[in-house]
Length: 366
Image (cartoon, rainbow, N blue to C red; front, top):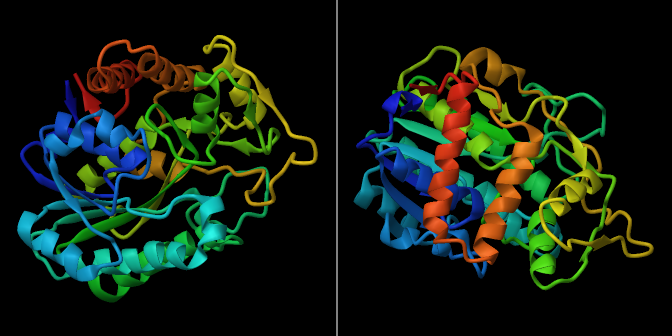
């Protein structure tokens, strides 16, 4: 089968933040698509780490550097000469942003500035897909999904820094890029889960760490709702958006796009835990007394993805039970030593593509 109109085969693609959860999955998928991939990251963010479990350091060109260091980033651009760029490098944790707001703002805002300064000065870069977050929206905790034209804001340092990054991308496009050959777009994705996420203070990794140790996981906000989606869902959106930018589709350049599950997929943390526990023997959780909500995160958040459906003919491929199954089964395979992680992860990408094909997704062809 052919994916994303075969745009990535043989092309040089740079992924910033490639050692992270989403970045490592994206890098592996690009390799499977036949791209020549390079990655730029400050470090390997956790132990274990999906990047290391997949052996990506020996499969792509691995550059280490801080996204805040423009000279180092520029040197990587000049050496690798990417044609397509996916920008994911960020300080991506809400609770950490409270502990270190300065680094969060520096990384997420100046990182975007540095990336855009590099791409606009190098004609060989033809496409840049800039990943921000669903947290860019001013969250009034309403029941309908946020659209790309809704107000941006942020009550915590992470959300605020991501809103700033999104506005930076918007201003660079209209000030410097709109009338150039370079084509760019920004993306905002809902809460992403999947195998290989080991970040602190995220519900799925917290569960896996506790359940592997035969302990009950502590849950901060069991009634908070999120548009849970498997990591491959937004990545398919990023890749399809990059492909359509490459092919100069009208109505895409300079735009922002939400990528998330169908509108009805908006479960509470407690519902997610119940579905995960059904696939993990002995799983338990508790809500510590007096800690039912941390105050650090919103309790209700939902995206409208109508724009991606209209302009890109993109929609999520997985049903919610499949999202949970893909996620928990990956961790069980890792925990129980069912073969090597690389082969199992590639198999999940192939399974996802097969489901996308049977459900008529526009980005995949038989």
